[in-house]
Image (cartoon, rainbow, N blue to C red):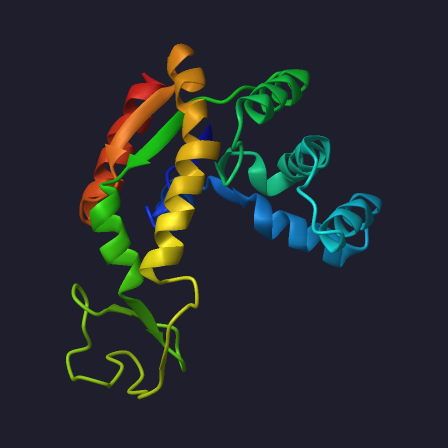
Amino acid sequence: MKLILLGPPGAGKGTQAKRLFDRHHLVQLSTGDMLRAEVASGSTLGAQAKQVMDAGQLMPDDIVISMIEGRIEKPDCKDGFVLDGFPRTEGQATALDSMLARHNARIDGVIELAVDETALVERISGRYACAKCGAGYHDTFQKPKVAGVCDSCGGTDFTRRKDDNAETVKARLVAYRQQTAPILPYYKGKGLLHQVDGMAELDEVTKQIEQVLTKIKA
């Protein structure tokens, strides 16, 4: 099965992609991670990508598509994959369709994690993690059992991502609405778009995604 996960930053795409791998062996394909790996490999494609990155330019669609094409041919993708972070535009979506068609394949479903933006800003901007083991916490929703002490390892040092603040999160949501959300009608028109409640508890979101997969397989 070949899926696309859509949703703004902080909607939980990474967590749900991991669960899809654990349950169905669908490999999470994050274009950001793939680009970094390609550059580190020293491949011809990686060298091209590095030039673009060093110049501070947007990555051309053909480079990203070629990278995805090479990745999905690897054995671990035989059961399928979940694209996270791509496509972002209708042009990328059509290019992806064309590439998959060359391999006699297609996207089986697009799952949008719908969110309440005001609540999402609060959810993201309150996040922090244990500096020692990485366990995640939240100022409001998930505090350590003992204030200032990590439940997992007992560490007392915590860190916050610089971009996990209200202003940055709001800017990222605006960028998502402007750049990525416009492809939703493209997939809706193909009958591939399914929406789940990205603001629900993690297990409930997973349950809703499993229900979508059941529909796709039917």
